[in-house]
Length: 249
Image (spheres, rainbow, N blue to C red):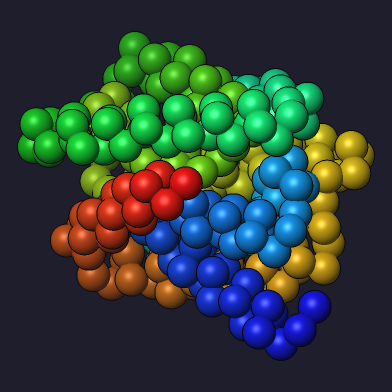
């Protein structure tokens, strides 16, 4: 590995961590870079999760220090996501590169349609609604969010934001603090599946983690200091990156 490759991974990691923390879709930067460097799809998927683990540790810590963290709700949603993530990760490592890439393209198109439709816009003035029935719906929804995140991860942040906005009506800052915690704990369950199956490149993963961690610190600080206006702006950027990546593929 030469210096140029290390710089490329660090830049991709920083951009990915920043976008993942504020919105989602950062893996659409990091995954293609890892594949470009010659990693098989399953190895790139597993290696990317090392960086995501560190990224979300940093983001959760920063949100907690800023006072934006709901422990009870985050854990309630995280448990079903963990169960789903194990299922999703097992599916991911069982597929060939060709099938995986085709499914990835299809899932990204579905996610892109969801983002462009922007269902959160019409509910942007809904107040917080955390009644018991809503919590049950959220718990069930996050089991399927976990399956998706365990399988591919890319774009899951946008799915979490949309899901929590529609179900709970929480502010985007609060939603982002929950999102990074949920992703963190289901990453702890899905990553071992890739590790034990030999689908992780530790050197590239740790270099990427440095970039992701720095990007997460920037993103979580910006989310708290600048509020929803900046988060929405990053959502637009994430959409643009998705479109560009899909056309490139």
